[in-house]
Length: 385
Image (cartoon, rainbow, N blue to C red; front, top):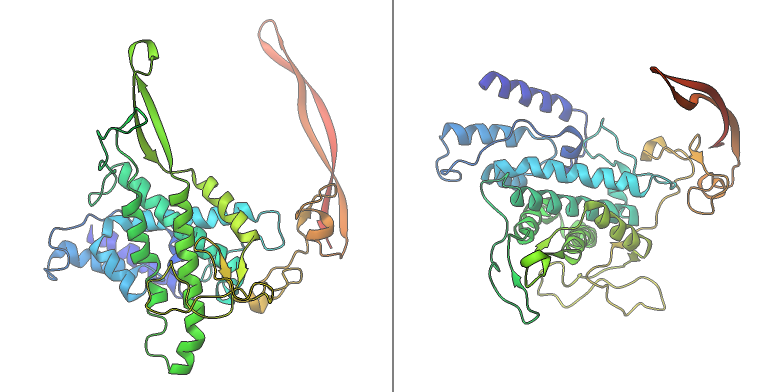
């Protein structure tokens, strides 16, 4: 056991040496080791062998800040769900942007995962923060309801309560509150300590960006909560539905991704102040929209917000980690973002005739074999210049 644990820690440390700016989202690419069980003495007996093992594993995970390591040590079994949630967020991001100039490029060679884009403060940055935060909520809540975590379970709080509509709560709802609370504690930790130790001038410049990140984290969590739906089951003779019991279930993560993509298209560029609703604060200022026409309007709680315009994703920029769109396959007949006009940024495209040979017109011949013809098809493949 000890040899396996040490080998795994050394592997993670080796993977961690390639990054200059670590980030917890890296767990979505490398995963975590074997599941750890929470020990009853966690947080009190620092000499306990199982707690020492948890501390060693949590300390070796790449990209975690001190507060996240503390959360990991207190809830070691949940960290696997964090990794699953980060992976869901990354995969959903790549699916939603698969046909656009920025296709949610990641790199396994750097723990920052998204590199320059994560530091930019653009609306792509806003989407990344929101979708990965939502991923953690989704994965942790699902693990609770599935019985995979000892520290939580499904939500039976409303079980048996009757409603004026003639049905009652039954079964066990998804424990969304636990998932949201855990995600706030873990995902928000890096943002809450960024300004520690900085000068007053640097704190002012950091504060808007930190609030932007915290707001987008919360917006992602709120999307999962807003898409919770009621699932019901009828009881009675021959399905008469004389009695109906209902419970709350989470949406599929693809629904969460679709909703966040719509919010991305309507993302609000902001200037300065405090976003109320997503961050508890005594201040009265709010982040304001940057447009002159709506300068006085505060940002809504569910909006995705950003402080910088998006960079030019058309041309390759190795320094900023932007691959450009040269060589990307485009759709000549489309009018959407995957069209050759938009994806190729007006540079034009190359056309290559691709031949495909496959079996076709297959028939079963008695007895007993299948006879097929060979068909050849030609398909035009268009790639950006």
